Image 1 (cartoon, rainbow, N blue to C red):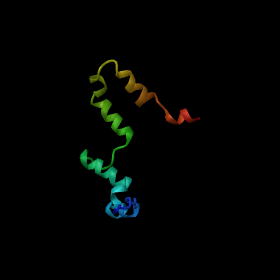
Image 2 (image 1 turned 60 degrees about the vertical axis):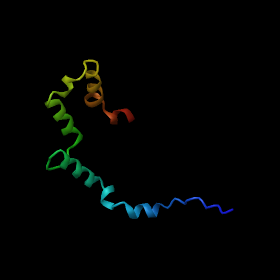
Image 3 (image 1 turned 45 degrees about the vertical axis):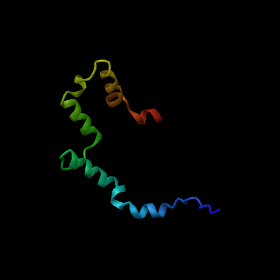
Image 4 (image 1 turned 90 degrees about the vertical axis):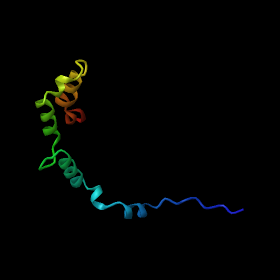
Length: 82
């Protein structure tokens, strides 16, 4: 009886099929900017400012509004680690 050997995972072959630019953070940011029709990649701060400027937090359920304030305005991750 003939038994095939199990397939060996070869990451080198996967790397050959994945374009290097696909892994680039800069390329991902530029792709996001093009989807949003922007000249430059947006930052977290500009995205939050746009969300607030458009009044989106006021359009969600009232129970969720404090959650936005806690997570996106009051939360300071660097203060948590010190």
